[in-house]
Length: 211
Length: 351
Image 1 (tube, rainbow over the protein chains, first blue to last red):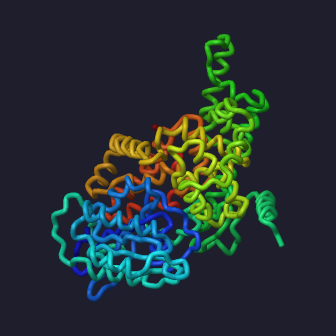
Image 2: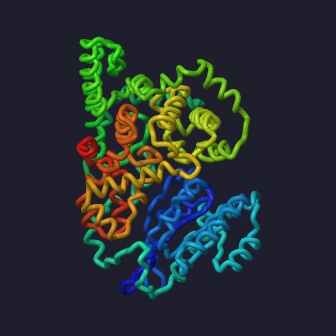
């Protein structure tokens, strides 16, 4: 759940979608501005954080990037529980991944936080010649279901920052305090003081992380 | 130009010529990042302290190797196979077997030397026994029988091959991909309930690097999934994995009550970090030699070691965890660079 403190907002965001749709690549592009042709497959989930300035406020995203394989589905509620936002990712070159994305939308509508900001991302937009899902089809679906839709490319960076920005703008600014099921994220303005405990950050993400 | 094989040979050769890669004198400033390859060909990037720790590890591995050789010299090459006390043995033999068993357990907890790993793992895990119950040609027949077949599992495997330790000097070559594919596809047909589960790609890849031959890696994977780990760890809904998570939560509550209460108060589910540990058997979270040390014990003592290890990691970070109330700071505690620099092993066997 998004929590508000002065002009700083902490928001839990979860990425869901079929395996290989490019969830991790979107996050890597957004957080580090990088792209790897072969991104390691995610097991369980990976965690990232990134802060954005939107108008007069800053939004700190706490991002859970989940594993896409069908059988990992049973773990998903742990990740989307209490999330303020979700990006449901599909691969525009795979009709199956779009079907899977719709299933995720249904599940979030039924079980997710009712105020959740949901985005639909048609990723791999650079692979126009292999396209299987038209932008119109996805846009109609998104409109019908109250999501906002963008086609993205983690490879070319197209629309990647935009989709996160758009989510940040749409997050409700004043949050009701009651949410017993949600993860409590305490906002600490004097965060720099404790930076020592997380000095590694993501600087070694590439090689060391995978050893 | 150079084929993939020669590249691999080259890297092995370089490795043997430079047993200890000392960081250059210019790298003394702590902030400088150094890159080097570890024993199993993984690129490690870290500061000079990390490099020094790795060198110390290598020295310890060599020392441990000398201890094993000494045992082989005094007790015979396969002494560790005679550790099971059976009623058929005479009492005098029983006693020596018991002594061997105690010695072996201690030795394994200190690590099996990399050269002996394939042989010791294969015998002690039960893989050799499993293999002996089927005709010699089982693996080859299986691979020939499944060649060219396409299933949902093979599709997913093909998708993950280049995404398994990308950049590794052998795994990330056409030859490495082909080997890993055969092992995973072969297993997906052996047990269609498991088929292919993401996570097994990392486990099988590391088994290939250690065991050297595909067939032995295949049997290690089989014994791991069928005998060593809890049931249904990787099958359709990961129910075994859910059980492990639940057990781990209870264990954490009992052994680290303060951390448990603190994380509970923050509503931070430990499964958020531990799922990957249990499904990849730490191969994605720890440096290779540390992972294999865990696997040494795993193959001899069983799946409980995964819980020991997970608990040990939490113990190492007790202070940091208790002081933090931010989710990202909690998560950062468990990043690899942090993990590799802490004396986890001191905690691991204490329970």
